[in-house]
Length: 453
Length: 78
Image (cartoon, rainbow over all chains, first blue to last red; front, top):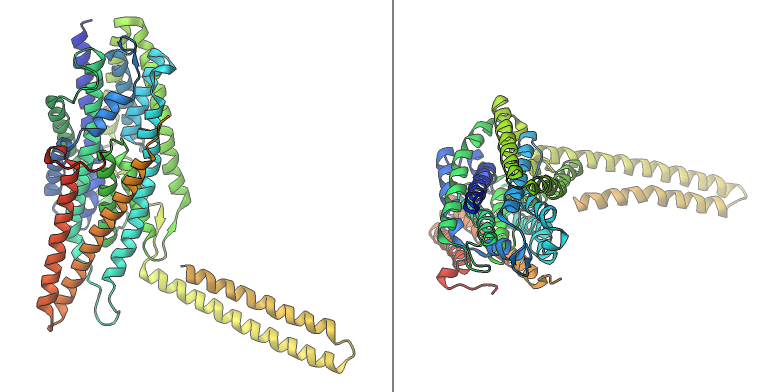
């Protein structure tokens, strides 16, 4: 098989991956302003597509991380060929489509890295992967970035509510300005998405070009690669828009404009800063971290650990699972051209099958709603009415407690008097005292929890 | 193995400072706009304050993008 044909195949598959990435993530950026009615769905989708396109041109740091640092070079050039990259990409695409169909939370970026790493190991042994770069530029950012974004979003939400709080009774806080602000913050998220996610594809294509000797190792990303990736992700974003519009009625997590604005500002800041330093992270995970953080910043919020745990498990699972698929595909390439054809045929077959299956049950909440929205479900925020009810219940409980204590004290005093008339004074008196102390302890505790809330 | 802890610190600080200042400016703008809408006295001042905050907010975003794009001469963490 000609060397250039396999390169063309890799490029086509990489661009397809880029397209699905844009397709998958439109909702992350634009769902909230559409839900609050700040912007018309069609305008929002077009805006997101254009900003993804622009974002892809802004930087190439992440692409350099992938093309230059992830895979070790052998003594005479690259030790892996483009067919290994093809196998890795196929693993990523298949895993991505599968999780999308099943509605499992997963990250396209981790699927991509998992597929590539798995294929490289299966194809050329464990020494071929540069684990230092994998840990410092992929795994650690993947863990830290959502936490950083979450912390920022938490503080931002607190700040936004504190600044816009006005004395109650005088006038309503009027936080309507944030609704319009969300159009801009969402746009920033779309831009950031373009800078980080489109670059991953650029990195893979460059890696394939270097591996097949068409480009020198360590050189810059070609302009046509940037342009092609930018177009693919923009097209995917635009085409993916119909899914948001279709799922508008199926219950997005309620996000208040001020909260959404804070979350999106944090997401955009975290992704843009990471992209600039060449960290390849999952935009979906960062956005999810922000949504959870900003939810916690609201009054009386609490974490639903089960939902949060389910999301976290999905994240942990993605990289190794995609690695296994990638490794299997790479093993097939040992059979030479026949194996390569097999990988291509099986891969495209699975993708087509999944596509056909997904058409059949058009859209349900399981595959229509974005992962970020699912992350919103990890926080429960009581409404004003619920909060008032909770406070009322607490007051009642406290009053009951106080009454009980008063009764107890009276009883104790009565006992004391009785005992004072009798002979044994000291032991029972101290006993009643400690009982009174016991009774006051739960009250103190109750007050403590209230203050915490 | 060479883990760039300094880069993580940079990302953390940039994210926190960037998002907090953006949200602070926008929140002040929203609050001033709300004041301008329901107070007769000093409404003009509040309104111009809101506009200033909105403009600063936009400038902050543009500055962030300027620092990221290498072609524009920004060179942030490098």
